[in-house]
Image: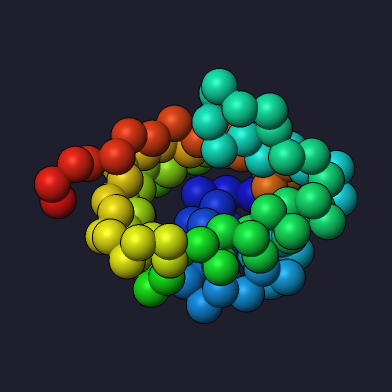
Length: 123
């Protein structure tokens, strides 16, 4: 995969996430992929578990918008800087997060996603 292919992969994931299509989003991960939303939480392991995780998040986060700020890719690893905002279903509060994901790719799919983010309070 080259940088253009990585950009397409991330854009496909962005589109699936914003459309709340957990099956399409999970299909962009390898069968044995590892998804880590936080370094302090256990990872989600395997495509089916990732699909379920995305499905649950879709119920909790309304009207999501994901903006890709910067993207880097070399060989089989990339980094994505992003801004994510949504409305929390629990209390209808607006949330904004900025973060970076470190992504390992195998073939044309995500093999590992490690995310580091912070909530922007008052945004």
